[in-house]
Length: 121
Picture 1 (cartoon, rainbow, N blue to C red):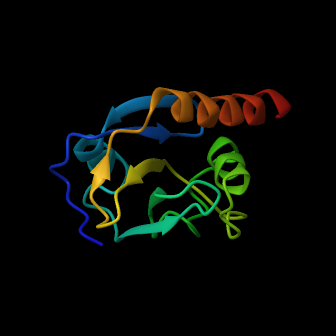
Picture 2: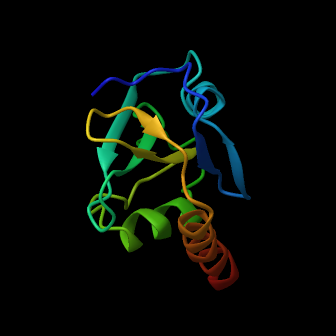
C-alpha cells in the first residue's frame, strides 16, 4: 500500500470525544505523529474503506478506550477492536492504496455510528 502523509484526500478523525473531517496528511499527523508505528487495515463492508491507528495506542492503558471508534470499526467489519484506544482515522483508498476523498454520504454514515456509540455511554 502506498501510504503517504502528503495526500489531500478528505478523511475522518474519530477521537473518543468527536468526529472531524480532515485532510489525510493531517489525519496521519494527528493519529500517529512521532509517537509510534502507523497501522492500517481494511474495513471489509465497504470496498476501499480503511482504518488507520497508532499501534502503540492499542494496548496503552493511559489512553481511554475509543468507544466511538470501536463502534465504527465493528460496524464496518473490523473484527479486532476491543482494545482500540486513542484516535482512529477512517479513509477511502483506490485500488493502488492511494487515499481518495471520502464521499459525504459515507462520512455521514460513519459519523452516525460514532454519535450513537457516544449516546449509549
